[in-house]
Image 1 (cartoon, rainbow, N blue to C red):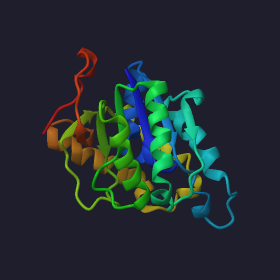
Image 2: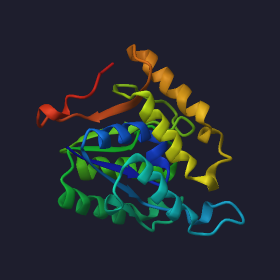
Image 3: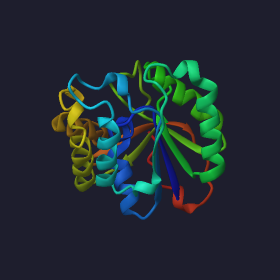
Image 4: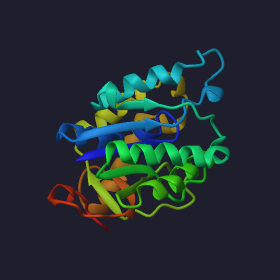
Length: 217
């Protein structure tokens, strides 16, 4: 399968579905990662302006995504609603170029203005594709756990290692390894396994036997 991760900002994809990404790569799937912003205006004081562009390279490499499958764009952080049409046009081109089997993007209940834009325009661009919304609990007003990916301990560790590459974001409480592991345990308990990542099933289209990898609630 070809899988496309849409991240409003560098690190959103790793937070939302890092273990799932690592599992898909290990299974031999073709994973692409597109971040729409490196959030230059939000980097901590004293850090290089482009630090997140460097850190995302290391983080996605830990998850196993080839550098050629990584693309970081230049939309201004917290300005996505003003560039809604341009963002949609980028996504339409991605759909034409990649024809992904599955798209992961922020959930429809994500309250961050940039995340909301990527989620809404992502549906417009990829509505003939299976789409799953990932959770970022600090942004979600609600979250519907309608699909799960079972992830083993090794993939949770990969996610934690990938997030550790974002040294400029290390002070954020949700970057704590125990939080990452605990959330995966909670989602695992919901479906009777040690670890899982949960997703909102925005659209599910079965194109072939290779896509039967989800447990619905």
